[in-house]
Structure formats: C-alpha cells, structure tokens
Length: 525
Ligand code: KIV
Ligand code: ZN
Image (cartoon, rainbow, N blue to C red):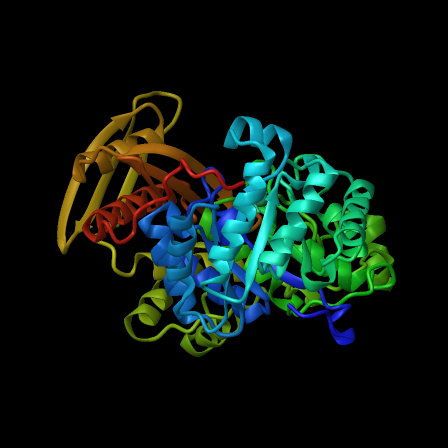
C-alpha cells in the first residue's frame, strides 16, 4: 500500500475473522451454508475484509472460502495460510474468484513459539518471513503478514521481521496479542515503537488482533488504533480461540459513541449489528451472554423502578446509545392468532425474511398453530419458527407427534411418530428422564452411531409459555453437526433438534467429501 492519504487517516478498516478465528474455536463449527449466510451479512453490513477461512485446513474450508469469494460483493475476501508454500498456494486458489482478495500469512516470532512450536532459530524464522511474503505476493498485491505471538516477541527481532515483511511486499502488518496477555498501555507502546523504529513502516497499514483472555481485547484494539494502527481484527459476538477475540460490535459502537476519545470512522452499518449477532449465535449455537455489551438481550433492558422512571422521563438518563442505532426494534406484541397471511408476510419482511411458495405456506400454518397455543407472539418466536422452517425444508425425516410420560415415577416413556421419507413410523421408548426417552425413541426409528456432544435449551422469550429453542450437537466419525429446534414444548423442540442434526449428518454423508469438517491439527490461533 502507498503512504496513507490524508482522508484515509481516520478510517479504521474492519477485518472480520468470525469465519476463521471464530469458527475454529471448539464447538463453533458452521455448515457450508451457514458460512455463506454469515459472509453475505458481513458483506452487506460493510465489513471491509472478511477472513473467510483457512483453506489448507480441510476440503470444507477450501470450498467455503472459494464460494464466499465467488459471491462477494464489496468486501475483500481473505484466506489464512501458514508459511509453507503449499498453504499459500492453496489459499491463493481459494480466494481467486473474489473481485478483491487478500492472502494473510503468519509466522510465530516470540522466543517461546520459535523454540517449542517451530523449533527454529530466529535467523531461520527471519528468512521464512521473507520467503512467505514473497510467495504470497506472487499471487496477489494485497498481502497481510502477522507476527504470531507478537506481544511476547523481542522488540529488535519484531522490528527486523516487520521491516523485512514490508520490503518483501506485505501491505498490512498485523501484530497479534495471540495469548491475550497485553494491556492497553503496553499495546499502545508496542505499535508506537514499531511504527517509529521500522524505517519503511509508512508503506504498510498496521493491524490489531487481540484475544480476550484477560477481558481486554477491545480496549487493547482501540489502544493500538490510538497508536496508529488502522485495521482491527475482530469477530461478531467476540467468538474465537479460548476466551475469544475483540468483539466487532463493541469496537464499532465504542468508536461511534465515544468519538470524542476515538476520532475515527468505520464503514459498518451499525443497525445490522443485532442481526449479525443473532445469525452468528444461531449458526454456531453459541448463546450470547445476557449482559453482553451492545447485543446482549439485557443491553437495553431496564428493570428497576428507578431506572424505568428515569427512562420514561428521558432515555438519556440510562442509555448512552439508542437501541435503534444497533438494530434493536422494540418487541412488537401485535402478532397473534387473529393475524392474517398479509400481516404475517409483512412481519417476515420487517424481520428480513423472504419466503415464498410452500415454505411460506408451511411457516404460516406453523405460526397459526403456535398462536393457538401461545398468548403473545414476539418477533423472536417468529424468527425461531422461520429459521427452523428454512433449516428443515429438505429434511429426510420429520417429527409428526410425540407423547411423553414424565414425572417422579420412572422410567419415563416417549411415544414418537416420525415421517421418514414420506412413510410414517411409530415407536415407544423408555429412558432415564423424558429427554433420554425421546432420544432413545429417535434412535429406534433412525438407527445411528452418532454421539451426543451438546444439548442446550433456552427460552426464546419470557414467560412460562415461551418457546424453547434447543440446540443439539452430534458427532460421527470425527465430524460434528449442530441443529436447532423450536417449540413451546421443550421435548418436542429437543426431538426436532436431535432429528435435525441426524438429517444433517445423513446429508453430509451423501455429500462427502465436498463438505469435510475442519482438521483440528492446524495451528492458527
Ligand atoms: O491470534 C493469532 O495470532 C492469530 C494469527 C493467525 C493472526 O489468529
Ligand atoms: Zn487469533
């Protein structure tokens, strides 16, 4: 990159790594389709660079990065690669279809990483930096180099590597706080030092990449920007390795709300933050902490009498941002059993869905059924219902009916009828509790070897008649899939989620090897 123009000086580039650092953390794997959906939303939201995956890691990662590259609109599509030439070449192939693409190549530079992880001497690492950046530049003009474990790297060596990377053609230099150890002051001083000492530092954009092990990822990222970095690497909901990465929504809203302290701009449409948070939470089955800044369900809720009184007099008494500014709509209560198809379609559009044909019909029938059972239908209920409708539209088997006998006297029993490829099958099973009985009934009708890795229930809205949303993760032969089911009856939601995951495993088996899961032996942090 040429020297920054004046107008670019205050623009902070948002580099989203939800699909790479976020997706590689334990349990957050997304399906191919989910990755495409998340990427599309990030692009629409104004993310500048989408790190779409780690192409060498698996066939599935490669396929997802390539498809995201094909479908990209405005965002630069980036892939991650280690220093090995085969990694870099594979990455280049995956991102090629994008209108604008970037190779992000990294190498550890700290003493502990060089000694134990790489088992290389500093002079060898130095040569590798030059070689990896040169190789990447043969594929594209947009190359980012990261000094993994940068915050624990010796200053002289870091400066020499950064200088060499820029000379070899790196246009972005990322100094990650890989282990989340730094403090805001240290991170500020690190960027200041490197930018001052490296003679060609004006030829690259500097980037932050902070992990949240001590809860300082966002503060550290903003400190880096104060010291001259102009790219922040972050993830939606802050998901990522261990305690996660800097949360995109917090970075964006800190810059907007405290522009007096952080006088920068980003290209993000903040009104899409809530939507992005929900989508990523649903795709990964990682619930968003209730009190999570910006996107937690309590972030704009006021319960105490004193606060409510203040809010009614003037919202500024207790709100530093408006809910609308991050895309939170006041929950509407108007949908109910008297609402017709027109109102339903209108509501779907308002929530950002476009359903047609059978999918719309089915969703409407299910909405009516829900409205008969539940007094108040919230937006979240409709979202849960439609998300499930979309996810299960092509499923091989569906739940037709479930009757469970539960209570203090075991064993509990479940009588289940499934529609399996158009044929009805019924069985009764007993178990240690109603969920166990239900899953055993499914097992009897759809025999399988899959193992249950996660079973999670949460209420979509408030009240005892709230819909339950259940997430189930199953694994089979080293692959894992997650599915959700929603219903006012927790057991029916559980059966739907379990069956949904089995359906995914079946369709995955049929599609292999195109969508292979990540090989966990990769070493990107
Ligand atoms: O945390 C880290 O150092 C990383 C690099 C691969 C950029 O994720
Ligand atoms: Zn990382």
